[in-house]
Length: 141
Image 1 (spheres, rainbow, N blue to C red):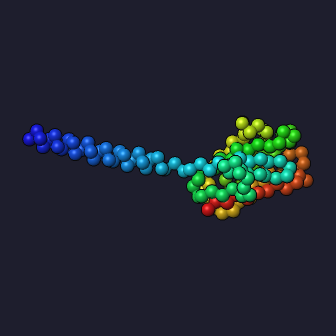
Image 2: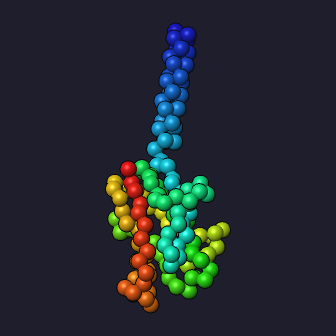
Image 3: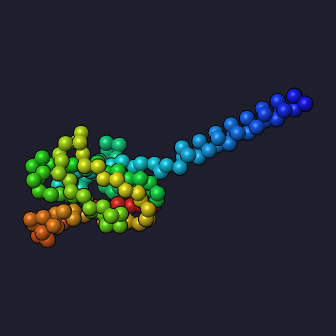
């Protein structure tokens, strides 16, 4: 009888260990990956970098968490450049040229398609609609 109770307890411990191991694995993979891009914005437009390499258009997968680490030129800090992406409720001013302390912009790519990134703060600034058009694309697959 003691052997049966002992075997029953050992079996329960083994089963509970397997279940908690599976739960831990599921929890580790449930966080969406973070896709990080450095962005430089100035009067000439947007320059994106992924893994320290320049890219034309940032692309991510649906559900990814996106992080833009944005800076501007030292000579343009006084002028409000920024990043606007209406479909993801992004409208941020970029006032730093310090790459060690960039403006961090984060959102989740919860829509698919090709979206326009533009400088909303430029349009609201002193130049208004006379400001040179700054546009780039953002793609969610």
